[in-house]
Image 1: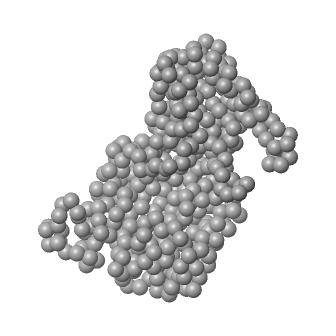
Image 2: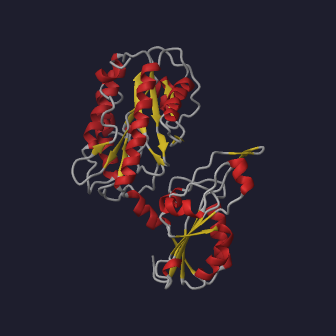
Image 3: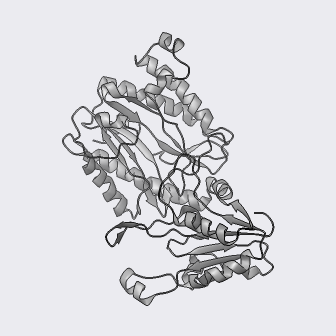
Length: 406
């Protein structure tokens, strides 16, 4: 942060669902990262060079309400909030505006926080957006800066404690996948398999899904963000899972593709093995100094060769293709990697060199709509100063390993 500056953060708020109901509360990831507080009605102020040490870091939590505690459950008091957050100075939120005014008027620069992800936008106006607008209107003569670039850089490098939580989320997700393999059979529905995974999530104290799961049988797997999960699973079809539990607000992300009846057809096998060969090759690039862009370009080149081998097009077709519309894009339309942490898709910079402590997905695939074959294989990879570490490393992925599970 710049000298003589203050940073202000607000927790998420409950989101209305219908009638008198709200969606389950999920904390703003940046606020949780900084405080560990998983409640609404909270604020954080940081003023690193304030002359009074007590005013350099202040956490505000919702004032205690006996009525709310009776109806909604236990509330955080200042002592509990101090223990959870590590903040020495914890106050109640009814004093927030007065304290904020005093500090901002003694600062030159104000850092404000908004969610920044280049591939996402929503029409919902968040509490963070409303708060930013309010502060900028109230103090128009101050200089304002974005806190997101600082936090994005911090959050990409996971601490040992964060890695341990992500590992645990991956362990739960792996258990859920194995349970699905053992319970799948022709005639069941995609939503039944979703229920099987959710059962394992809940039985292992996961807070829920890190993202809406994809449970796609047959040709449904060729829709990259398929979400209905309501079709019957047919004999001789493949079933694609893209799933991940959230544990203590940290995400996991796994994709696997299995035969509904436990047996790959010869064509399914050759397509699966093509994707697996590419996955093994590009995993070698998950090392310090490499980039997502490099992994993408390598994958597309390797998958193009595999697609020729699979008879989807010929080398001559490639030589004559429109360079702006490469043929491989008919069968592979997405990137291979994204950062994983408090969000399943942590902030993305595909040109940033990898550093030790980053966790990224590795997810090549192939989607042949005319054959009803969609295959994606995805693991979560930890970047280290040495070799990449697959956080799903013990989970079966070879065809012979998978088919023995049925």
